[in-house]
Length: 365
Image (cartoon, rainbow, N blue to C red; front, side, top):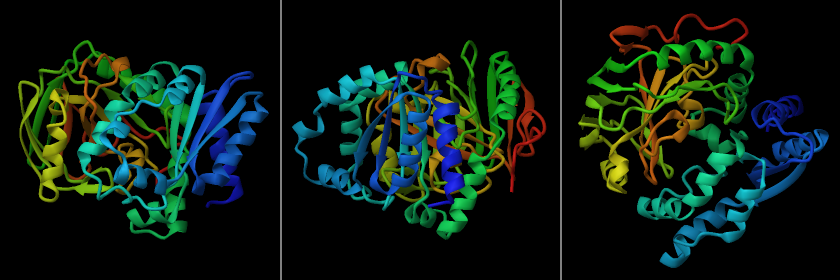
């Protein structure tokens, strides 16, 4: 949905800012059928820059049927054509437009994790050599997850998209210098006192290149350095299932105790997926002033200004992280009402703003 002007503007951002498509390149457009208006706008924009659009269209029901009926051998299958595609495309614009965000909530988490393991070679190629971006196309299902009508959700979503990405990039350049010159992170707050090292790690600013909306800066904790405990005010969503009231305790880098107020069994199953699942792979700081409320969608929620997020499992190699896992599960800590983020003993996030005020041109409520 959304106005034609909003959809066209988003398509322009995705093609020209996010993946920077160039003449002669192959640009894959990965989407489901509900995303047709945005997919066609992206298709048109790709043609305008002289690149070659390639559609990859799927259906929610097909994914559900696959996980309900596929054999172990089919779950473990690595599609050779998708592997070939990953090696040949130059950019991938992934549009998420679910008809039902809970379509896979009845699928055992192990099945989902096993499929991720099977296609990991494809994921690694995409991450390593392809310029990619992930975005939403607003649907009734996404709106329902936020307890909003579709017009209200569209207003929230396009506000988060309609930022001054140049101003955000400039703010993040300063944040990058500060993070890369710091050694120890400490997070304090409600039932939380957690610390870890980021010495020698790279900070990756995200100003609309791989996610849209965007607005975070992240790095990787040193794998054996995490100590202490953390409580997450917001639920973590995995495979459409909500795990809330999560508490994790770390010792020598690993989760040694884990509990949740709802769906604790899912949390423990994911932590047991492989040895790397108990280690932090990412530490990120949200800074998009257009994202002000929890939406149950990690694409937006991890960008929320005044929050931090930590992912158990796989780290991103570009940040210097070395943790390997089939799991990468972001969990969000709210520091807006109570809590602080310290770097080497200095508070850098206290009032919901990161390293200073929101830059001019960046839009909040």
